[in-house]
Every structure is written in structure tokens, then in C-alpha cells.
Length: 61
Ligand SMILES: [Zn+2]
Image 1 (cartoon, protein in one colour):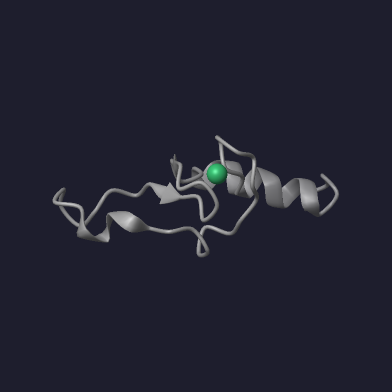
Image 2 (spheres, helix red, strand yellow):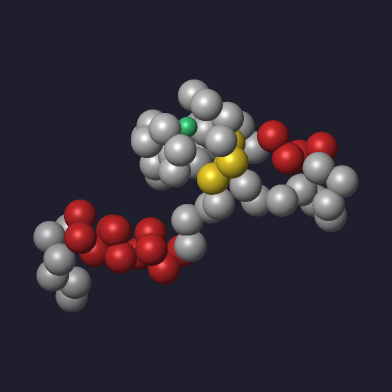
């Protein structure tokens, strides 16, 4: 995913999920940019699926 603030690209797993100590339930799902610590909302699964289709060449079976 790409940081909405500084444009740095990183994997969601690489992001600092700093909200594990968040008092809200089991933490919110914001992903912090490892570079600037901006909290990015997680990408919806639908967008990921669309991106995968484009990577394959845009011709899903
Ligand atoms: Zn950033």
C-alpha cells in the first residue's frame, strides 16, 4: 500500500500497527507508515482484488 501522506510504498505487514495498545476493542485497524507514522486506513479487500486483476493483465478468466 502507499502512504497517503508521504507517498512511501510499503507492505501492510511492514507498517507499524501501533494501535495494538489502543483502548478501543482489539485496536483499530489503522496502519502506520514506517517512514512518517501517518495512520493509513487499511485497503478494502475489493480494491486489492481489482489490483490483482490488473497485475495479471486485466483479463480475468
Ligand atoms: Zn508516510
